Length: 276
Image 1 (cartoon, rainbow, N blue to C red):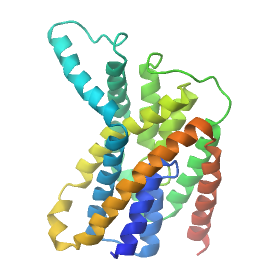
Image 2 (cartoon, rainbow, N blue to C red; image 1 turned 120 degrees about the vertical axis):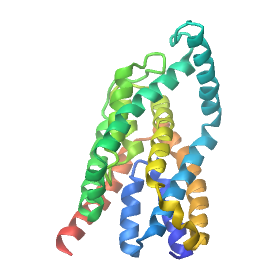
Image 3 (cartoon, rainbow, N blue to C red; image 1 turned 90 degrees about the horizontal axis):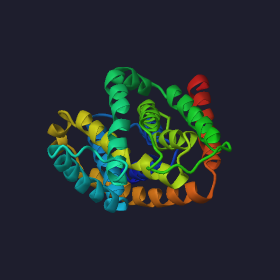
């Protein structure tokens, strides 16, 4: 893998992980046309996911730290039989909603892992997934009553959003787009919906890292780590940029601009797979 490939792939991962255009889809496309395969791809993918995960921690550090502190306070209250006190402590309720949302994601990811991996054998599933992503982004902008914050959020909201995040394991279906779609169609406030979408990506990415890293790091020393490290840095920096851009877009603009983009790319991939 060259440094140029690493920069392009890192940029695609960082931007597409948080913009609703599917990082898995774009990485699959680029790796196909670059002809990159082997152990280096696995290691590179792992470190780029670490980079985008670090981007979430940097942007949402205050929220994450508040959740960590609230976790210990929750344990202390339970030890004293004081109950969860979710109505009185919004941060605690947010943590519970993140846990609930992560359950269907984990069930889908573990239960259908082999099926999803089979989708990466050709570009056709990626093209179809991008078309689906465009559709859900378009639907997400249909007029509906929104404005629910963490105080009004229920476990049903979390289950719906977590299920959509699990389905987004499919190449071409955007994880951020799916979770944001779930938040908007269930009536969550736009700003809170994007924040929740990024926060629930943390346990999802951590879980996938554990699965992907099994045995892969044994071959790290046998690979040229220079391009891999460069890709990590690029994915981190572009991830920070993408999160900030996405927050602004969700608050002020329409997601349908992304629909047009993924439809064009998806149609190209379907045509390329069927006729080339």
